[in-house]
Image (cartoon, rainbow, N blue to C red; front, side, top):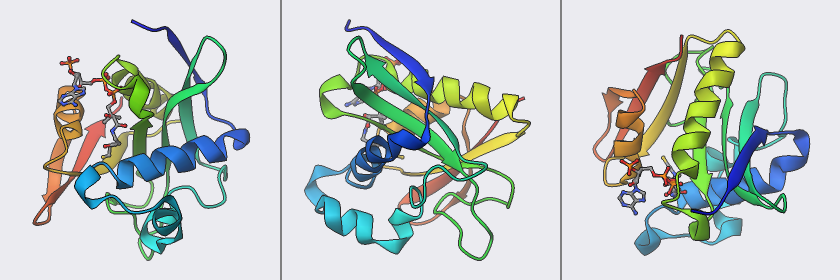
Length: 163
Ligand SMILES: CC(C)(COP(=O)(O)OP(=O)(O)OC[C@H]1O[C@@H](n2cnc3c(N)ncnc32)[C@H](O)[C@@H]1OP(=O)(O)O)[C@@H](O)C(=O)NCCC(=O)NCCS
């Protein structure tokens, strides 16, 4: 297995997070949109716009040379401009992505675990997310303790207690 390490995300990581947001939005290659189209979509853009704001937190996995492997981060949304996985003001919603060449090597799970640790350290009680049921990532979330709390036709909102 290739080695990666995980460090806190900083304001310098906006590009990596945007890359991972595009990967998350384009999880289904059959329905992939261009990077520009994804990042101009207001419903998607607000997961990274203005990164890193007060209250934003996350982690980046990087290889031995310091090149990003993937990222997981969380942001608070207001009730009047919620994310897809919004459950309540004060519950951060996470986004997760790993560059394609690094997938299935443990980075996604390691990033999720580190984000949960960081959320607890910041005093949060829960994390939320939204996932399409057809995305295998849902099985990863279930195995990390996320539970479905709301569903649409194709997607679930999931929540995990972090302390
Ligand atoms: C979802 C994603 C972040 C997972 O990251 P990853 O580094 O590949 O995941 P891991 O290597 O930690 O694997 C986690 C689990 O998923 C399983 N898995 C990995 N790739 C898989 C695949 N293509 N199909 C089915 N299961 C898979 C692994 O076997 C592992 O389970 P295990 O520990 O029981 O063996 C990554 O695939 C990705 O970036 N996908 C596109 C973006 C996306 O869908 N983000 C989530 C949006 S909600």
